[in-house]
Length: 384
Length: 65
Image 1 (cartoon, chains in turn cyan, orange):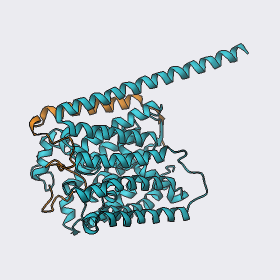
Image 2: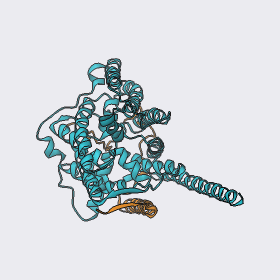
Image 3: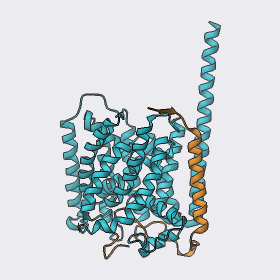
Image 4: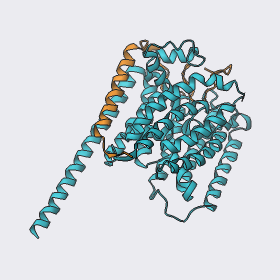
């Protein structure tokens, strides 16, 4: 009796100490986040400081709700679990309801208007397949790397190098053929764009409902819905502050180009990195780049949320073959996302939310790619 | 087949140390930031920065930045 009581007391005390350590750790990380805001605002200005805060918010929401674009698609393919995809549609719709009127009223703001190119079709398909093998898309790889997931930490450098390489060769891919970008806000007007796109999302949501599975959803509780609404609001704030929508992979490619340049390679003759705007970015601090700052904030935000919940540095169980496959998939993710003018965030989420037709094309091609990617994943023995 | 099933608490510390070191090195080798040429806090009503990059931008379009 006494020993049972002792054991219970020990367990409770250990849990309390663990929880206290976690709260202390996440409190220190939050202070780090605020220090980052102060430093970035001091060094490069208010706009970048605000974008850092928005990035922190992305990371917190993605990590706290385990909001995954990749997982949302993957669990629908074999099990018809609709919640993940529905939540994505809600996030896109929230961002769209704010962004589309803003884009119509403020021509200086920029939508995620990618061209309709052959490279978009190929790149989006490959990205959709690779993200299932790497178990993370643009945002997923970043947030999981931020919270210390070993696989994502291994995938991220490959993603960075792939983004650099894809951007470097993008002009050559574009020579295969491309139509100019089509933005529905400029073609149809704000109200018509909202009606058409919201109706399309509602139709897709209804189809998902019609073919829903019977197993319980991977997501339980309201967290995923709050995260979707929060991400939509932050994406709209991103547009207001940066003048351009939420993006991920441009920043990753820039990091790769800076590292390559630091290793002594001259990129001034490259068809992409040699362009005047890219040369300016390469010689400026990375903190001056909008996408880089939100990416960095996302990394830290994910760690803060994971640390609070005791989910940082998760244990992994992967055979060496799966590690290798994940890293190769990371390289493909980076390369293909530049060919496709964005990843799940820059093309799918932001593209559709700002009325760009390339966002819809990306969605269709990447989903087709994911159908293949899930099969490859199963062949490799990876779990859903 | 070798399977790795463990935690790597040092890995995240190493990752964040590398991020901070790379940021400091980048700051040191970059063109000094002109604090008098900073864009306004909000792009709304002002537009994006002249050289702002985004993954959706067409690099070879005549109007691309």
